[in-house]
Image (cartoon, rainbow, N blue to C red; front, side):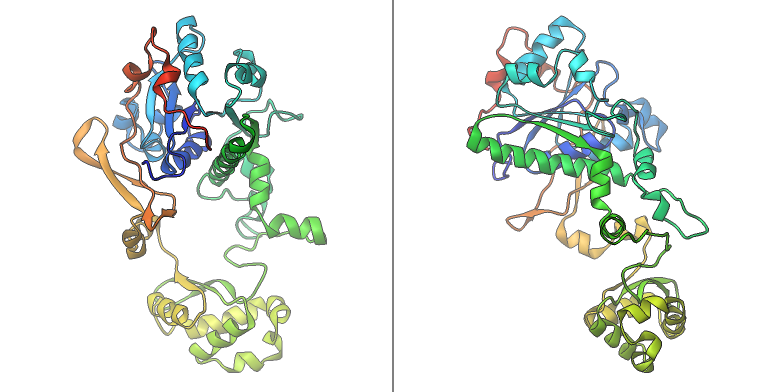
Length: 398
């Protein structure tokens, strides 16, 4: 991983479950050495989360396996004096400390920002929490679904009859993790100029609101309250889910030329000159009638044929797939999105993990090793009489 931009950067990762581990997974793919500091005998909570009870019992649950390839694991009890000494030696040689405890936990353990800065003035300390380190909600517990509800995200997911609905995956955890990873990379770049570490306070609530785009900005700027619209895009028409002969099809003919091309390809040129659909605002106002006309034409062919025909002509369109179908897309195979790794503790099984969609010098970023067993790297890091800071490769940049 010497060709990756974060080669030589050591990250100490105290996080659990998803937002934090997702963040450090991005850093690992970019070349950082990520050392998970885990509670002895228990480890990351995600080790016991997943659909296979046997894996959960073995502390390698699917949730853990998905986000922790390429990392190292060392068990440390930060209430034990010997382990604290080991941790502080690691801190002295680290570049980044990442945690996702509730606000104030690190301070109570004796590792608040001032203490960490004294140990290592170059350390970048990133704290991910539901609501940030200050404010009236800073002490409240938070999971992804709680953030989805508080951010307004659930209120606009579904139809007027079914909302509020939870988004079908932990989007707030992922967005929070990405915001943290981006901030850490920026802090490393900044440190190259200042030589000093910084304290990054990442709020999942705020990161999620920032990712909601027009749903929040339309209200803030124009006082337009977003409403749940199911499978339709409120910003344009025709834009949403339509009905092909064999199943649903997404079409986003958001621009005038795309709408006209769509009408031509479905043999409904008359829709272009219909006053109800003559421009963007007219189409939005008459969305139901327009969708009815388009669906009638689309039912003549299967979704894949429409996808190929419309996409080739510049109209964004694609089938709606299941997860099982999506992971088999040829596009992902050609891009090398998945990596097959040895399965931890089971030589007869293969572990397939995701990348992050980034190619570096025309090659996908991949993990080089499977997720670690709990404490797998204890011997490498728990050396009482050795200066552990000297074992890490120190860099002046970033």
